Amino acid sequence: MNLEVFSTCPASSEADLDAYLQRVVDVARWSDEAGCKGILVYSDNSQLDAWLVSHVIIQHTQALCPLVAVQPIYMHPYSVAKMVASIGALYRRRVYLNMVAGGFKNDLTALNDTTPHDKRYERLAEYVHIIKKLLEGPVAVSFEGEFYRVDKLKLTPPLAPDLFPGVFVSGSSEAGLAAARSIGATAIKYPKPASEEPLRADQRLECGIRVGIIARREEAEAWAVARARFPEDRRGQLTRHLATKVSDSVWHKQLSGIGGREEKSPYWLVPFENYKTMCPYLVGSYDQVAGELARYFEAGYRTVILDIPPSAEELRHTFAAFAAATHAVQ
Image 1 (cartoon, rainbow, N blue to C red):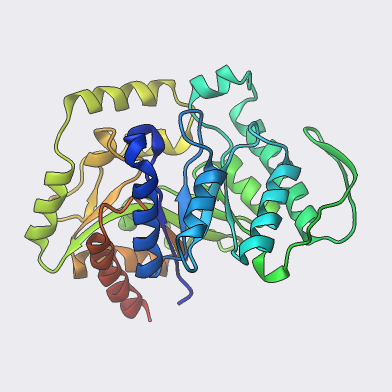
Image 2: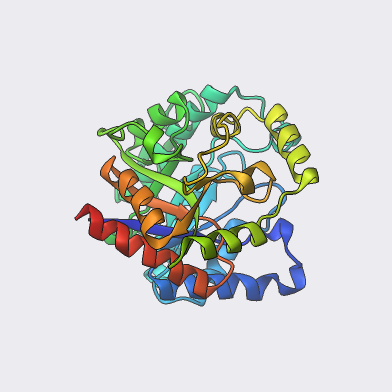
């Protein structure tokens, strides 16, 4: 089974900046050594520049591919294509693009982006179309759409075909799915429990999920680790409630609307509900987590973006569950 696993880089907005650089290097090295394909690098108004953080990641790893969050209001599509081509030329490293149509409302307002939710995905599709055409080369690109226009624009240096970027888009809304189909992107969603997901993912798309994982040989140990890492937090619950009210994110509202899970289910939303993470977690023994993962894989999901790993050991436990899941599917 062709499975791609990505970890996530620590967020600079929640870090001691004096120690942040070393933290990024550590997480990147753990991810590289564990066998992750790449690592998601966040981008919003409160974060360090995602491209500069990705540069650090590349310099300290052997094969790890940055999955750079790209928000169209931050830079022209030519600048993104130039960054991808430049990294390819300098490091022979592939870059993935996590295309962000929205963001925090206050961030968008501060940048005077009043574009409605669905229109932002239409804009995103035009944006990615220009990037891909520039990277395909060698001919000059002319394009005139509703949001962007370029005339005989050519990119140098050219990008080696084997370094062409993978593109991810949120697949939680119909607008996001339409954009993913339009540009041939992988649609990423924050899943419901596997038993509540459709039996087959959209077969017209490459599809993936974003989840955290805490797995151990014994179920009780996994839950002890999980509850110690993510205790109940009343302040966090209030912050989550406020964030849900002011966000126009479809996935945020979908997760917020999922009720409590059965006692024995590995699917766990407490970290999300307490505003400690932005994704659901799977918690349990290797076999229990593997069973849940296997059902996602059987439904057609072939990409997994993990939460920020707290240690190299945690990634080893996670990949033990992946090994069991892929063996079950095969």
